[in-house]
Amino acid sequence: MSWILHSSSKKYNLPWHRVISSKGKITLNTVKDCEYQKKLLELEGIKFSDGFNVDLKEYLWKINSIEEI
Image 1 (tube, rainbow, N blue to C red):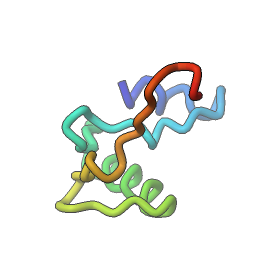
Image 2: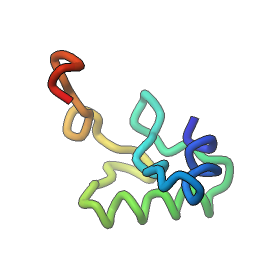
Image 3: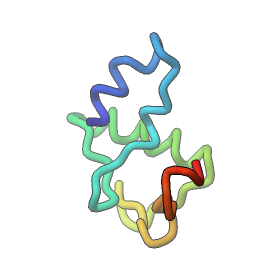
Image 4: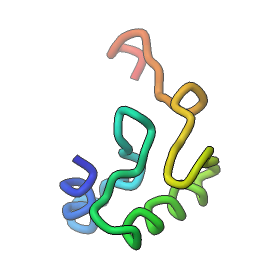
């Protein structure tokens, strides 16, 4: 999913770098791309627990209903 956002990000100004796997891991195809996404997330204050892993308990976006958006 991230690669779809990544490939459309310039055209539509999408924050593709904020999409990670449901397990909290950056899963792009190359290490270079993973490092780039990690750097963008770190610039937003996201801390990585190990390599390309994020603690979803800390950073998962939680809402009770769509009306809260």
